[in-house]
Amino acid sequence: MKNKVCQSCGMGLDQENDRGTNKDQSKSDDFCIYCFNDGEFTKEDLTFDEMVDISLRYSKAYQNAASEAEKNHIKDLTKDYMSGLKRWKKKDDGCDCHHCHCHK
Ligand SMILES: [Zn+2]
Image (cartoon, rainbow, N blue to C red; front, side, top):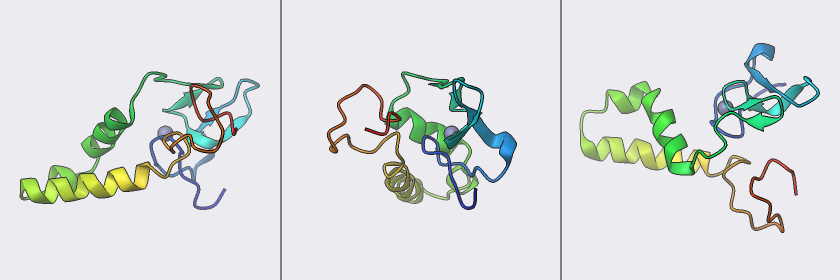
């Protein structure tokens, strides 16, 4: 469990207690407790943009940014980072299910 991050919101999963639970109550390797509970996303309908907004709300750098331009820059970086997470990756690998945590 080193350097794992939640594949939905991007927070670190270093602590056992930070990890979400699968249906069988085992710990999820991919998602944190805030995003994933009992084998389901806690906010099933959340969109990518909403998740970016939530993430920025917790970002000190973003909240303390001196200018709009700086905020936009941080937002772009956050989007870049989060679009690489499993939940938000473009479904271009043959997976046509509604969500992408089915691992294809
Ligand atoms: Zn998460």
